[in-house]
Image 1 (cartoon, rainbow, N blue to C red):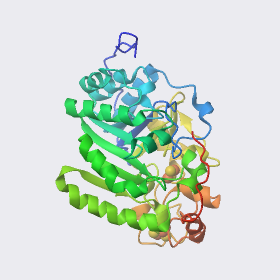
Image 2: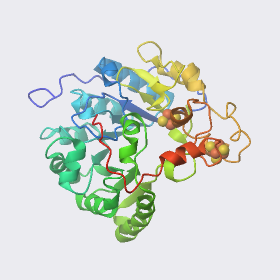
Image 3: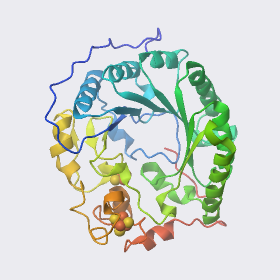
Image 4: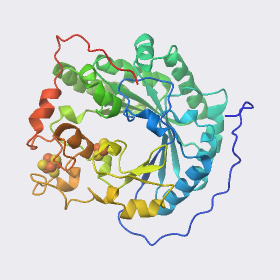
Amino acid sequence: WGTDGHSVVAPVVPELPPAAAPRAPTPLGLLAELTYRCPLHCTYCANPINLAGYRDELDTRAWYRVLDEARALGVLQVHFSGGEPLLRRDLIDLVRHAHRLGMYVNLVTSGIPLAAGALAGLAAAGLDHLQLSIQDARPTEADAVAGIPAAHARKLAVAEQARLLGLALTANAVLHRGNVGRLVDIAALAAAMGADRVELAHTQYYGWALRNRAALMPTAEQVATARSDAALARQRYGDQLEIVHVLADYHTGTAKPCMDGWGTRQLVVAPTGDVLPCLAAAQLPGLVPVSVRDQPLHDIWYDSPAFNRFRGTDWLPEPCQSCALREVDFGGCRCQAYQLTGDPGATDPACHLSPHHDRLVALSTADPAAVAVPRRMR
Ligand code: SF4
Ligand code: FES
């Protein structure tokens, strides 16, 4: 934001590029990672470890073009994310541009920093939904995870602004060994915040979270309790609050259909303009992302080797190739397969049928007697 509280880039009336001939698959969602800069230091962050490699961010006009090209491709939802997207001074312009294109606009944020009146400006520009992270139900513990003082109180103030503005609000809490015991309290906090929905998502181990896996991993007992606590919370809040409890695939014995299938429904544009099939794919060996600086999004989505490498099911190895669930989970997550086996084309070890499932099992059970491992804040 400028010092007068207004954005510093004049809005531009969008011009849609000529529609390309429709081809399958059509992407529905764009994760626009505007920046990896963030004032918070959460140990479970899924951002890449090499944050210094992402300082050359796309400018406003480049993002306008990305949004235009995404809409022309068929994208209906944009999730402005990061890092912390509020750090982009042009956020309001990007929200307005996406709204004018007819997209459903979601802001994935910690709520920090949010200047007075900024949320009202974003709502007026066309923001449809706010996804606000909370770290814990207890302020002291929440601020310790965020790594800055009074973060919790500031988030509650943002939620109150969202409520007054009538914005759709999802509270999002990442669950880990240090807070999963307060799942019901976190649901209660979300209800008190006036959220429509709370996502209670166990840590997914990518980026900084992978580095901190040993410290974040809950015990088997905690995982079992979390299931019953989520059921209790659902019973307690009924229709008042939608409760989405997402167990980590480390604890389910099944592989998740990561990104709804590689290159099928979602695409990610990193702060520098690299286009990826998922937010962690930059780590995969031999995967060369193409940037929106170099090619149109249409060509990257349909024709780049990165998007075609694991698209569909023809590439699947056994036991996936002959499995009844291959069109359901597409063999699981490519990044997790790489992280645990060294082969991004392997069956995801989260699946109990994977020949490497025992590796994941060995990593998925925290020793209840172990002292907390020091964590590296991002
Ligand atoms: Fe999914 Fe492959 Fe496991 Fe079948 S074998 S459930 S396709 S990961
Ligand atoms: Fe990359 Fe799952 S995070 S495929």
